[in-house]
Image 1 (cartoon, one colour):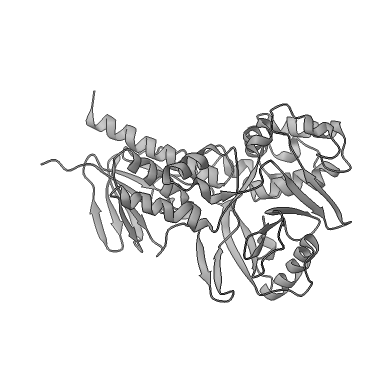
Image 2 (cartoon, rainbow, N blue to C red):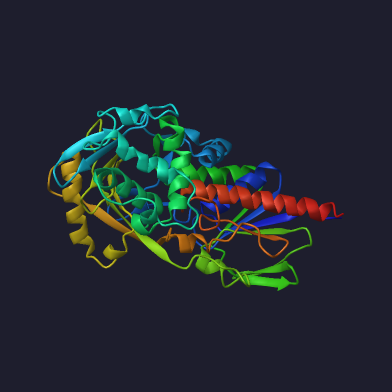
Length: 424
């Protein structure tokens, strides 16, 4: 009797889960393996003993126009797990002089919001926003500082804080092509595509557990705590997967998707070029319920923190491109960040219990040079595809990019399987 083809998805971060869910939806026999004892990768939740509560390892923002996010959450039945304002609103505070404002792009494609002083950045005029149009064009191989002057009020109060978060790279040296891709899929499509959304009550509840439940319901095998040590290659095919718990031999029709970090994948796949420069993200979580009516996110200018996130039971802070903070004393950093949070949200100056979480290699450096090192999902091996936000998604390292890469890898696995079953 001929056995049904198996598709091994190795890595249960968002890219791997996206691939596994897409394949399970097509009735494929999926085996999902993950080295860690839990799924989620960099998008995970855990119970923190110091705070005595569930927290996310980091704060992840998505936008209402993120198409792959929408498809993924609808498929796993978790679209209700995203929350945000009913329209595109981004409150900001300039810590240098106390100026507060709310950026309010209008819903339609025609950006009339830039005509309104009550919707745009204070201190800016209409002509300043030509910078957005310039950045939204295609600029392959160009740095942002080759496209924009990187100075002035609009840069300091909008472009710099937004782009450092989008790219997790100092914006001046960041890829104009990647930054432009984000603008084309958000602000260029109007406020309806730019509404900020966060996972509630946690990343795990929105993106991870519903996906695992979906996969179990579809008959997928989920094997946590199972580390891949390497691939055994024969000709143009992967012949076996060398796991720590034993070797898995592959039949002719079996397929493999590697959804692992680039530094893990590169030694396994001969001749593969991957990004090799990375930047950190630092997050701070405080055990304090914010006052009623606190905006879900607030952008900060002129301080250490980039964004303040307000959840029902905690306040969290995100700092992107945070390599310079990796060796800072955690308690001193908590105190400094709480000082900014207290000003932003009008809270007491005495800091509540807090936790610093450092992700040292959070994303690849989103520079033109590193973007050029991102491989496609297709590999030189007939039965092997790649997934991950570090592959050539056309976007920076984002949740949207990770989920798209999983869809791409799933489509490659299915097309390869179809070709193997129907040779010319």
